[in-house]
Image (cartoon, rainbow, N blue to C red; front, top):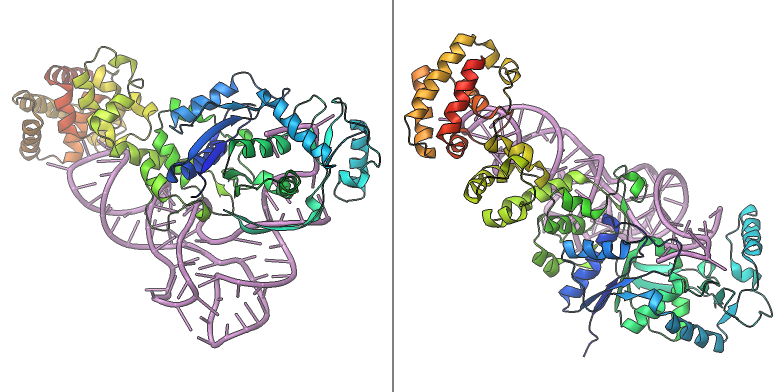
Length: 468
RNA sequence: GGUCCCAUCGUCUAACGGUUUAGGACACCAGGUUCUCAUCCUGGAAAUCGGGGUUCGAUUCCCCGUGGGAUCACCA
């Protein structure tokens, strides 16, 4: 029987989460779900100074929005200090950890000296011969046994690690909290984590981790080192400075969580076919961590926009209606559900994200101010005399008025009007569309008139005639 | 500077060493669908970083350059 797959997302609560962190969480979540395993959340709050109030809750809000649901209660490292101490004691007893006798100024001096000599800084070059007994007030350091490794990484493949990258790193800080380097090893083991997914920034420390696993006599989990998401300029890791947004901003702008997951999963991963749009279930079925690209991928929000539109178009009208509830223009406040659904049905295919809904639909709920530039700036209509436009609108009004205002009758009335007037659709339809919407763009004419209703349409045409 | 990683259209990517005139998608351009915007359809432009090998044959394997990234914290 094989061990149950268990993955984790282990963010530090030091600010908001952006796409980079979420993608790591997504990959870990997908690995768990596709193996009927578990996915757990661990808050790495071992740096009190950098902790940001509320970020633990924020992290959970992000995961909830995206339905990256976790199993068990979230684990907080700050509540497990005793456990780290026990592991530390084991290392001390085994002669694999020692108290750091130097002040931080002294260590800093070593570092600067190494820098000046253009050598990498290695603390172990200054390893004290007779370190004092650890009394909780000094940092506790790992006593490394430098060696080289060749290990398989799920994403990177075979990676060689040289002993120059292995050092006596700090296990427990002088404030009594463990470092990430120590705590995550202990926790992953204690929690039974089988697959670790994390960013490339940890790759350089990986050899230290292998060394520590050996010292602790712990079997290392499978490691999947994922490349960073690059800034849109492509020259460096995406950061807040490059416009990386709080993931919940996308929720506010009306992106679908499944579209966000689709976008992030296919940023650096492809299933080998030509499929671009995936449901979450398909991602669980088809995702393969070993096929994730080794190099970083640039963040391109235009692609997210396209994927979001594709997911929106795949939604049933009822589903879409439920999801856009908070995005209607304020003018729609008193509109009834049936009317709003009809409007939504007309704009569904041109909606890219929900925050666009107001500008796309406002004229369905309220009379927009007359905008004569829509006609004076129209490439066809601007050539017409005002009197001709008035006449056309008057005729249009008459023939529209004679229908029962069903889309079908409106359509045939409009068609007949084309014949009678001998005008092109580009002229006649544009004129009616502008008169009834006062907008530069709108859905198809006949269905729009139908949804707007007789009273509104006729009144708006009258107003346009009067204003010409 | 040391260590490690990476390298296909502008972007995301596909291509058991041969079926490839390097495929798809986004973005872009042009045309079509009874108006606009959008959708949809058709077409277009657009890439294997350079140099050496290995091989009958290299996008694919090896080496050297070049370029890019990560890291070298009592941060994660």
